[in-house]
Image (cartoon, rainbow, N blue to C red):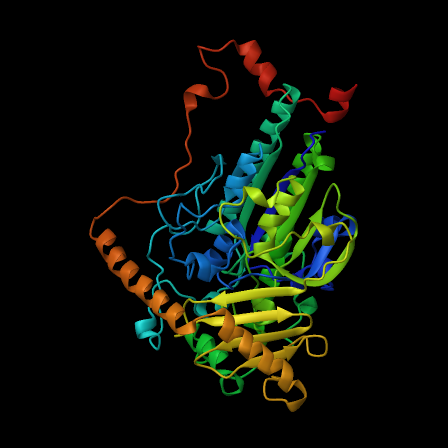
Length: 512
């Protein structure tokens, strides 16, 4: 057993905790996530820091809010100069690896990872830049619409299942190689991030996962809203994804939710595969395993789909942690993905003196150990499509406050209103809290300066993308290196030495 624990992060894309068995969903079949929760800590108030893929992931990697590193949208560059937990863990002696999606934008496609063993699934350039100068115009070419929901169902294969199967295979093989290292005497701790695209839309599932469910056990959205019932931001999102104009039948909604649950189970099988690989190499007991997601999915609640809002189904994420030093239990404390960088450093016995830049999170290891944590807070920022101004969320205790300069404030008490049906921002009973939150927003963010920076960077990237389309520069899409001359058995090798290196006996045989 190594002195420092290994760290394995298994990340979903667009997985709301509401659709996991470990979080109480009555139909979801997630035995592997449930098993981790049964022996570890379940975080019931975990949030993303921005309800969109790339900004959320950049915050997760850096431990910094998106406004601090200008990670505004899905085409924002993640600067190579921003330190990540992969950099810090390497400094602490870890062998680091990324298998799967991280939506890095820009020429740096590793961001501190020693190994990156798959390509990404989405563009790494500036193609998906929103345009606040034309915020009232609907994005079409690369944006969501209701056709995605209408086409939900079954398929033998999709680009998403191709990708996730490759991610699983590559990650398992990498873990087996760490087992081979152990057998050869190398006890270097490792950190693996294995990141899958499911259950992200399109809501299309392989038949074997679709067949785990039946139509009559699929619940419909609990709180559907019409366009006229929406708050202004919700209405813009509803219009932007065409949900205002393209009606869905009950059957279409049910099919989409069934396929989503099927893909949640498919993702859960990947969790099981990673745990099994750790067992196979004898490292499970010395590995902290974390299951989480970059954001959730509204999946028809409030008449909305996908993400891009700070409502619970969109902004909350599952966060389950198990392994050495982690007790069994559940904690209600609000936390967020920026907390994971300091958590990893704490688990790896690294002090704050290693930090090159300030971070916005705190270690969750005290909560994981079952100790009290006075911090009960998560902060979110959204500066992407379907708005013309930055949107902020403060979740503190049971209250959630949402602010946008262009919209009326929103305040919800989640202890009595988990579906966020009643906006309390103008309720006299909550006047003091609403005022305090409003003052906190003014003190924390210069919203006008932030908006100007967002728009300046959008204009620049839109021009750069046009230039790149015209032939300027080089493609940034990651191409994993491969050298066939060093694989399997080659003439310059002693085949008995190669065979001995590749053979990894079962743990019981190695110990006997």
